[in-house]
Length: 269
Ligand SMILES: Nc1ncnc2c1ncn2[C@@H]1O[C@H](COP(=O)(O)OP(=O)(O)O)[C@@H](O)[C@H]1O
Ligand SMILES: [Mg+2]
Image (cartoon, rainbow, N blue to C red; front, side, top):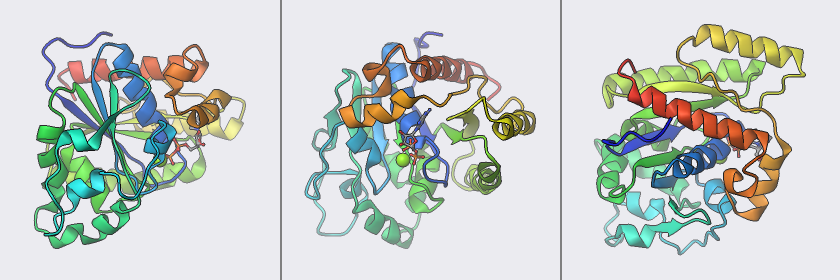
């Protein structure tokens, strides 16, 4: 599937309130896959642990301009231009707006502002100019930063590791997506993406079956398998699709990106 020619910038949130389920990997990999299909992509690191920024080779210093500065509306914060905030990665066409630990503080104060949910969406209008896709890597929580990311998003991709605990956690996320859909973003659509799938494990196979039944039509057909090259690439500062383009997970993420393009190209949502 190639890029639609008349594309408006699409904003995607990668979210799941559980940690270690493959959000950051999915964000970098789908982003890189869309670049390989000819798109210009901006990644937005919304996690105070800044794992996405670090994994893509960005040294994160506390005095660097980050998304935290963008969202900080205290009088002492100055004006920021997109150029201050956006950095290139090792893959041309893939840029990143950094996260940093101050996001935790900013998040704490966000609800003090009425309509805070729309803050990032408003900023993205100028920040995302010239990009085909914006991918937001959410933190492992359903707090104000995630609500804001879901409000700014056209689509949310939910990486789920098919195991028993993950299936429980996902119901709370579904409630949050439904609440955002009703309150601040009636256009929000979602899909589940099964990741880190280990087909040798019987329980995992059973859980994948259940996910596919429960989310029929709302789950990617592509499944991302466990792949040891994924862990290695974070050390190199390169996205997986650049570090190991022919490894199985790279091909699967490329296929998932194609499926994503089909999804947004179809009218049924
Ligand atoms: N398909 C995969 N195969 C093997 N390891 C993976 C895969 N996807 C992610 N990982 C590893 O699992 C860990 C958690 O992934 P990460 O993307 O950081 O999750 P999250 O952002 O949800 O916390 C990382 O060490 C990452 O390298
Ligand atoms: Mg992460």
